[in-house]
Amino acid sequence: MASQVGVLVVGFLLTSGLGGLLGYVFQKRAWQHQYDTARRDEVLRQAISTFEELATLMDKRIYRMRRLWWAAQDMPGGAAAGERLKVARDGYNVVLFEWNDNLNRLLALVRTYFGRATRDRLELEILEEFVAIGRALEDYVGRVEDGRISEPQPSRVGHRLNHLAHRVYRLDIAMLGLIQDNRLGTKAPAPARSEHVAASERPVVQFGVQGGPVWEVQRLLARAGVGDVQIDGRFGPETEEAVKSFQLSRHLDADGVVGRRTWDTLRSEHVAASERPVVQRGVQGGRVSEVQRLLARAGVGDVQIDGRFGPETEEAVKSFQLSRHLDADGVVGRRTWDTLLGEA
Image (tube, rainbow, N blue to C red; front, side):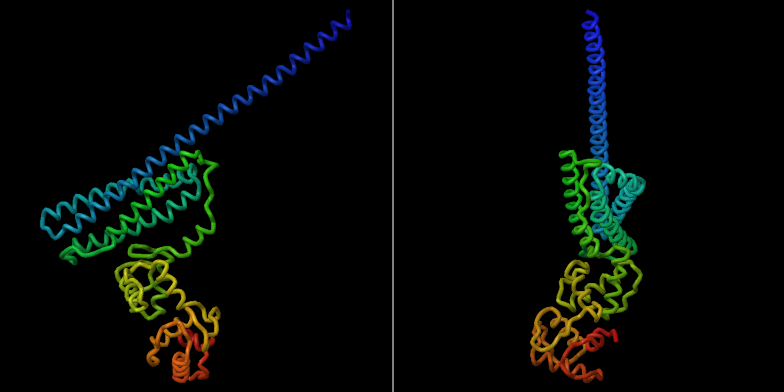
């Protein structure tokens, strides 16, 4: 009898202890689930709020920029047009103040809730273009107000605003996709390094842009002998005209914008001589076209730029070498490259 009571007591204690432990474990899991759910809902709420504020602010700035652009185009219309321009400028300034007051906070929120990839895309593709177009727009409006422009002139500002609006739309779609898929906070996608590096190494450089890429463009233009380019890191009217002149001389679209083809042409002409291959009779391709173009610029005969190193190109190289007191072997080696590029 005593042994049976003992067994019952032990069974009760074990059952009660195990039951209590299991109850604690399940309760803890329930609490954790409630916490995770509440946290996920809060992240979702903050992400939606951030998206709505950012999208609204970008749309407002694009619209105010367009209004200012339209008003500047109508400016030669007299006093009424001048008043419309003033109203449009005041409206743009109000949005610009709001933009500057909230920019860093919004960048931090986007980084927190949408990840670094979205934040980098916003800063590198969208915000920098806002700044560049803003400078171009203010320059144009200033020239209109000063009377330096007496009638509407073709400008890329309107086109760039349309392109920017499309970029903003695509960013909006991407952010809404992250919200819909719940890829927010710690689940947000990381940047694709190869794409980021490729984009940052060759940005589109045009009127209104400032900084390192503009310095490089101006340096390359100066070395190409295109006008008197001031190397100051600011892409203004003088740099734009120099780019157009360079593009015309290289049979590119003379739009004053340094895109992929203009970058390629600028850089291909100014790669260090040590990186250049020996070019001689029988060779074909881009390096031959480059040699032929440099020979033509040096005024050496009637050089056909066709990318084929034949007898005519060889004779032109020899003529160039003789005139520069080089070994006239018709082979474009290091010293001939250096001299052609003015690097000797």
